[in-house]
Image 1: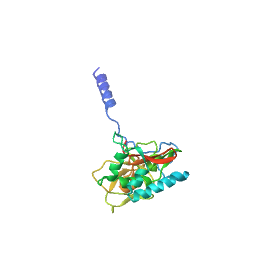
Image 2: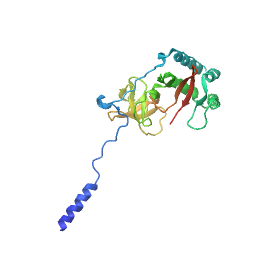
Image 3: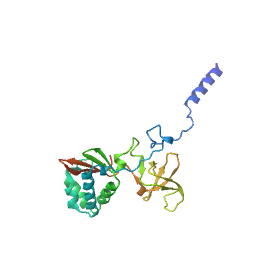
Image 4: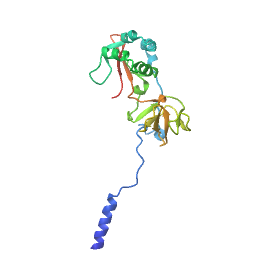
Length: 226
């Protein structure tokens, strides 16, 4: 009787004991099970050339942004432009951002348009390509490497040893102490290291949506976050 009770207690304790700790799930694997090693890359794409009228419109807008020509930018903007996910939208809100000396909006606009994009429909274009073509993986934990043979370093120091190099990979961005110049990342093979933030782009960073309205292209949204 006592031996049977002991065995039962022991079996119950073993059943409740934690098993071996498994490796954390990597959130940035390719959703395609046929991809070797499930390594995920997001190659640059720019479909603007498919519609010459949009290509010309965007080129003129990029020139206006480079010159910080407020009038030309506003002329290319839809009056109901969405600039946030709250109530503060429209042309006046956008104009206020353009005039805010502390805002990075001019640089943010230029960066978004420099990274290509894709048509959602014949009358809608999204940029940058990182947003327009983002795969079905976590948009907050993962970011795209926007360069070829980008160095992954041992530490955030720009002259530290190189662990490996990556090309247009989608990588996991890890929590870390403040380091403005570099981000700690985890790769598909479990290795970790640091990448210069200039070579990383989140799909929820600033993005633009253009709409063709009554035959005219207009900047319809410029937002960040979710």
